[in-house]
Image: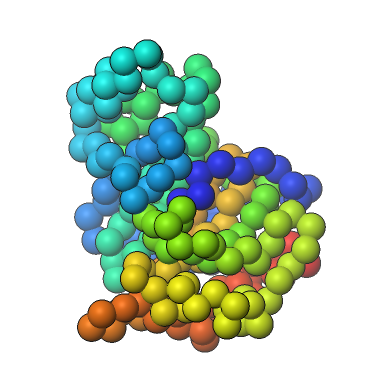
Length: 205
């Protein structure tokens, strides 16, 4: 959801550090601004072509592309297309929209099978990353315990949006919901967050 990552850690990976459930019908969403709350959902190649054609001054320099599964729990995988790769969007959307292979097939289509080094790990509001300040667990150098930090993020702890734990690699990112839905809000499941964060810490630590 944060949409832009650069390598900061020298260990590459080819699979996620925690399970990506991929439950429910896959939805392909894209943004050229990083504002996932305003993302466009594209169902096929033609929709992707129309999306690109909608930029009056030509295609943007970068586009974030995600496959999101509504769950529960919500889960997602994403990649950033930059410069010449932006023109690959219709083919990528066509392949992702027609894929029935879960997160493995989506990540393989997006990255060719290599996620690259771990750059960042954050907890934030799904499809609202820029609306609610995210909580950084790993910035490429320092690990911060999410349970210790959480009281400093009341708008995330009890949130208007589902809350997810996201890992960003050099080539792609992925995340899974770590909140429980109540009648009016989404409350972080601290046990689930701690368990999944532990898998990240074991890798980067």
